[in-house]
Length: 268
Ligand SMILES: Nc1nc2c(ncn2[C@@H]2O[C@H](COP(=O)(O)OP(=O)(O)OP(=O)(O)O)[C@@H](O)[C@H]2O)c(=O)[nH]1
Ligand SMILES: [Mg+2]
Image (cartoon, rainbow, N blue to C red; front, side, top):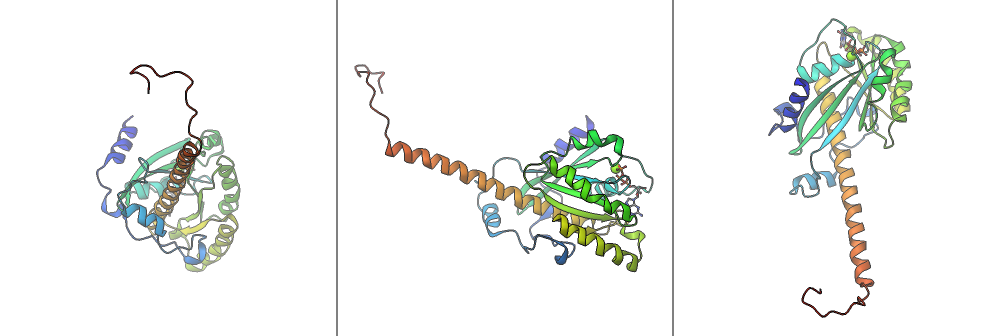
C-alpha cells in the first residue's frame, strides 16, 4: 500500500529530479556493442516534443523488466539507481519487485516502470506472468560467473515469447568491480558476441561502485521514450487516415435522401 502510494506520488511529481532530465541523447556503453547506432533522438521525435505536444497521447509510461540468473545482481542494480544504495548481503527477490522512476525527456514527462523479477526457479511462474507488455527487456548476468551468461539466451527467449511487439533488448554484465582488466576483457569478448546474436545492447556495470549504473538507466529511458513517441505518432496518423477516409467516403457518397417527408420543425 505504502509502496503503491509512493509510486503514484513519483508519477505525479511536477518535475523530474535534475539527474533524470534528458535533453541530449545518452551514449551507449560502446558504439561497437549496440544495434542502436543513432547519435541523437530522431528528427521527428525532437519536432513533436518541441511543438505543443499535441500529438502526445496522455501519460507516457514504458515497462522495463529485469531478468536473469539467481544472484546475478538485478535487485542491486535497480536499488543502486532508484535508492542510491548497495547492500552486500544477498536477499532473494520473491516473485517480483516494482519501482517507478520519473524522467523529463526533451521536456516531456516520462515514467519508467521497473520490474525486478526473481531468478530462483521456484518463483519463475510468478515472475514470468509479469513479462507481458514489456517495452524493454534487460537480461542481467554476473561478469564473475560465466555460467550466468550462458543462460541469458534462454531468459530472453522466454520473455520474448510473452510479447508480440519486439522490445528494446539489453544484455547487462554486473559486478564489474570483481574482475581484473584482463579477466574482464575475456568475458567481454564472449558477452558482446552473444549480445550481437541476441540483437541486444551490451553494458558492463558495478552496483557496488555505481560505475555505469546511471548512464545505463538514462540510456534505457531514452530508447524506450523514442520508441514510445514513434509508436504514438504511428497510432495517431493511422487514426487520422481512418478519419480522412471517412470524410472522403462521405463526400463521395453522400447519404441517400430520407424517404420520410419533412413537414415539421423537428426535421433536420
Ligand atoms: N561486488 C559486487 N557484488 C554485487 C554487485 N551486484 C550485486 N552484488 C552482490 O550479489 C549478490 C546478489 O545480488 P542481488 O542483486 O540480490 O541478485 P538478484 O539477481 O536480484 O538475485 P535474485 O533476486 O535471487 O534473482 C548480493 O550479495 C549483492 O551484494 C556488484 O556490482 N558488485
Ligand atoms: Mg533480486
